[in-house]
Length: 358
Image 1 (spheres, rainbow, N blue to C red):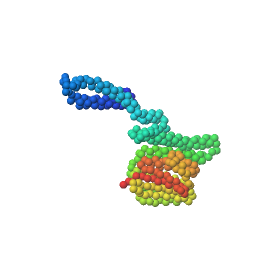
Image 2: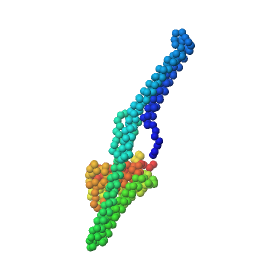
Image 3: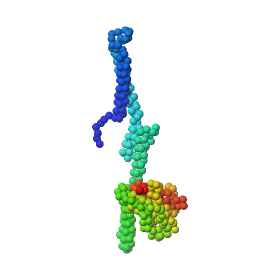
Image 4: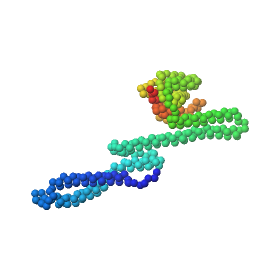
């Protein structure tokens, strides 16, 4: 945006300091002149015939007052320029950091030292903004790279299958169709998960009262065959709690958590789904038995496509690496909080806290 050139803030402050100082000096001299000279008689002999008269004192006082005002003007300009530069130095550092950020350098931090004044608060807020922005940009870059890789893999597999089938005239056509269907289903799952993740981030959904206990029972009923197939005991308990949001998205949250708890479990394991009402929150907990999880793995569980070694599956229920990322995004879109905690005996405890609906 083109704007007409103007005076810098430092020059404006300098002019203001100098003008205020000269004005204060002029007022002080005027008060002195009015307060003192009005008691001096305006005649040829002066006071008692021995003192100068008002005319002589005025002409003697005027040059000294003008000299004093000139000194105040010079002192005000020089001192105001130095003082304004010192006061605006933090603002210059903030502007330099903003200029670097505008050119793509988000790793620079101001780290302003000194007392907690307005400039220090502004610098701290700017550093916090840069930190979050750098984190979000890095997350988006990793997400784009991982999403591209996940979407490229089914296409590469399909191309490889077609190449093999083209070179082998005796290749089983039914087997070819089955493998292509399997790869295509995988690509559709990834695409749908990405679309759901994008919609939940934009918060484009209608808020309505949702009973989390009913949602938990519905998700458990849907996944009960999977739990029975794996020999997992699925238990749903708790009280009736309500939250405000999208019933379909919250059902996806519970379904993903329960499915994750079933798949990442041990033989003859257990999954517990519990709902309870707190003072200002509706709480849903999904807890499962399983292998011990390293502490450094927990923060990465909600990152897209970050499965980790201990999370990788090779069966038909191998996810696309977006399950907990979708849960985290939906919960955040509902102004809630997702907490993941490794259990001492193995497994994971996932706690969803949503604002309670009165």
